[in-house]
Image (cartoon, rainbow, N blue to C red; front, side):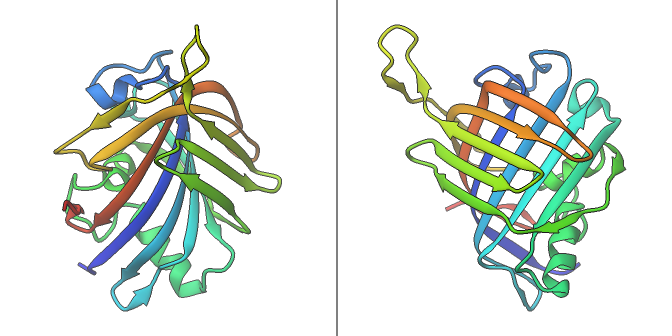
Length: 210
């Protein structure tokens, strides 16, 4: 197994209501799951290959709950990545070189019926976890906007967090609202649905906890 580690931030927007039942081992809000996930890796490596400063976007869909399978996955890799860096990121996101069940990408990989060929594109990502804001764009493929949840009466910013001490993606995530569109092989339109902002620190052994 090749040792790897990635540290950065993520903005995830899915079709569930705020809070996302999946975070509580419940069934998805509408019976199916559709999501776009944007990652900015500030530090990282795959063996001796440096992965710091690179971005990845994933688009995912399942006809029912994730654990019921038949999922589809499509990745966009940062065009600044070298061929070696691309292969390393694809290996990590495919769940390879990871202890079973220890990362979200390893768990999800077991639920896919189809993994589409990746694209290599310029990726624009701005994520502020504490402010619960995000802006993500890949021309011709993805447009994501994230903002805080608003109090329906006062319009004030609402802050809520999910703490998963034994999770396989993050330790603590800020809850927000996301609106996104994607084109290409997994098209979707999401409006004012579950938005997740988190600092992530993962390795081939799972979440790295302070």
